[in-house]
Amino acid sequence: MRQKIRKGLLAYTAILFPLLFFFLSPFIIVMSAANGVINGSAVMFGLLLLISLFGSRLFCGWLCPGGAIQDQVINANNRSWNSKWKNASKYIIWIVWLSFIVFLWIHNSPLQLDFFYLSGINLFIVIIYFVVTTIIYVIALITGKRGMCHSICWMAPFMVIGEKLADLLHIPRFRLKADSKTCVSCGKCSKNCPMSLNVLEMVTSGQMDSYECISCLECVDGCPKKVITCGIQRK
Ligand code: SF4
Ligand code: SF4
Image (cartoon, rainbow, N blue to C red; front, side, top):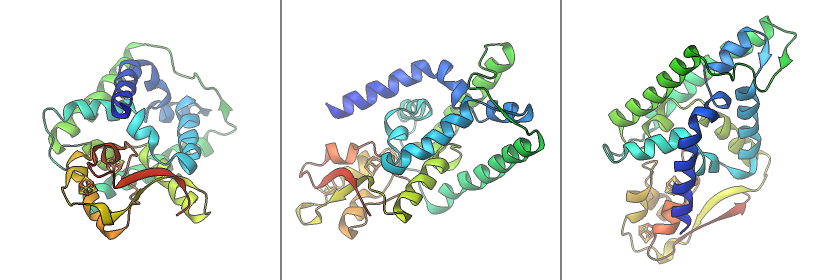
């Protein structure tokens, strides 16, 4: 039931993506910064960081329209795609991208806050929407399971920073727990994980924390022995 609700929510955000795009766009935030404006995307990315202090990456697993697109592409390519080096690329892209935005903010200050800046539909915005959704689709099609989340997502680093901050400050946040004694090593958790994490190894090693985990709870709900549970707790 819980997975039906999650998948339903993701499908709904995918339908709403043409509207949500204005507030999650990696391009409109740059165009706004070039005009000295802190727009809706900038506010939303800041909010995602704050929410992840206690909610970890629940947004990615339950509400992200980009994630929803990729989960559909799994029907065409469900190859596992996850490694330290593949995951590193998004941080490099993110640092360059955010540095450029901060440079524009400093260069164009004083800044004004306008949540709905550039949120009108025109041909240029439609082209940007088409380009971004196509990039998400093509990368997932080439790489496999949530390959875009692993490799280029511009939102994930905000939430990973929030998670790391929470751990550093001992703030309780949403995380997985496991009782490895009851595990029968069937491997269903690893097979079901949309982020291609080796969940079985996480269970046997007792290390359930992964910054690539999107808190989708597929592993929790699919485990025949109910080995994995979740809750808000300190590290
Ligand atoms: S699905 Fe459950 S029982 Fe099977 S390997 Fe994973 S944790 Fe162990
Ligand atoms: S480890 Fe579990 S909760 Fe995390 S992404 Fe994989 S299946 Fe989802």
